[in-house]
Length: 116
Image (tube, rainbow, N blue to C red; front, side, top):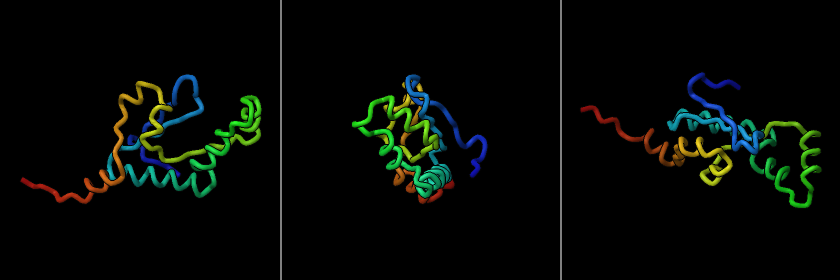
């Protein structure tokens, strides 16, 4: 699965958690389509949001047990983030991020073209 150069930006999450990567797409309809394509690729392979949270959110496991679990299953997980996921990123990235809803992007794509 490839993405056009210049249409995505990849960065790390908070400095304390370098296991998080952020792929930013243009806030356009084509950017939304690319993000959905990547999201669906992970979800179809059972590597989406639910699977990620199942693996990381287990309160019963100690940190060392969780780390051992990830060493045994070193797979990449991915999902389309929502606004509530922004605090997982470093402060500089949060300042530069623009969050648009799917409805906003689709409304822009469906808007009539004004030629003046």
